[in-house]
Image (cartoon, rainbow, N blue to C red; front, side, top):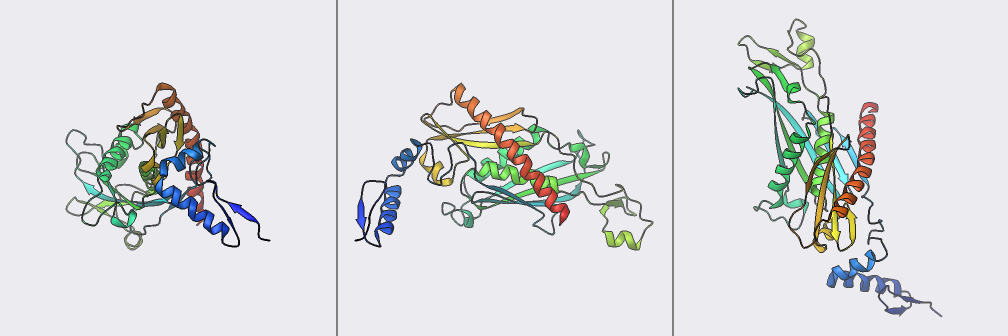
Length: 313
């Protein structure tokens, strides 16, 4: 006699197809009544992917995936995937900042990243995230722009950072910011010299070996000394519940979210909350900040491990 099986929503079935039928019923309920489906899980303090409410998804960082960039990184938070690449170009510095370089940051969401992004129509959230990234990186003072100077008043580096969203499955800003940080940690500033016309040109290692007399402006390749690195955590707010690092499905179902950015010293950089029905009370914001501090420790370790793996390779 076949054992009876039942679905989480009260249905029963028998026979070898009982489990499959139960799974189909749960999936149908999830599609028809997504909010009720999630609230059923929230009452048990667990999410459909089995994560506790305050736990972020598995995160990985791979440095140097783009061979012809000056610095690059591939970041995955759950299924959300970002590819960041930096290209350096020599520019004339601004007259009011003759000893500083510049940053230009762009965030792209091609149609392959999400079914909600249509070909020929830029994603509405892309320029918003671009602005958030620029504001966060500049206001955190992670990069000392003086380190991008070459010849005072004459030449400095312009760092073009392009971030491509390859898979948009929630918490896009968190993943984009982490990819930017990782790409800048991988960045190597190339060797340069002055040509006969007084222009700054990059010097390849092959040219340096063939002409050892080449006079270099910077004596060796170097990395930026990143300070006060900003890390972020997005939290969904739904009633009394706080869900860290939401998926795209959770973002579409829940009411509103808060993104907290703290630097590596634990100092607040920014708090971002778009409009929504849920009010972010002081206690809620404090809890989001506490969760962000926990997340920073995780991200620091992951970033350090990726750097170590790069050195071994």
